[in-house]
Length: 122
Image (cartoon, rainbow, N blue to C red; front, side, top):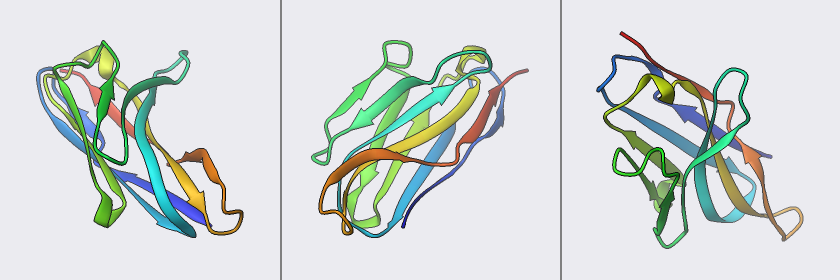
C-alpha cells in the first residue's frame, strides 16, 4: 500500500502565501519525479510543477516566478511554496509521485494524494 498525504491548504488573501506539503509512505523502494497538479471547479486537472529525483524543477507558465517546488528525499516529501497568490490560483491541489513499487518491481506514476483546497479571496 502507498499513501500520499497532503497538508497546508487554506484560505488566503490575494498577494498572500501558502506552503503545501506532501509525504509519501508505504511499500515502495524509491521515488522518481514528484509533482503538484490542481483542479478548479469546472476545469480539467492541470500541471503546476514537477521536480525530478535530482531536484530539477519545472513549472507551468502561470506560476513561474511565484511558486517554488522542492523536495526532501530523506523524508519522501515534496513541497510547494506559493507566493503572490491570485484568485485564479484557487483550486484543489493534488500531489503525484512516480514510485518503484515493492510488489511489482515496476515504476508507477498513478499515485495521488487526496487533495487540499487552496482558496484565494479577499
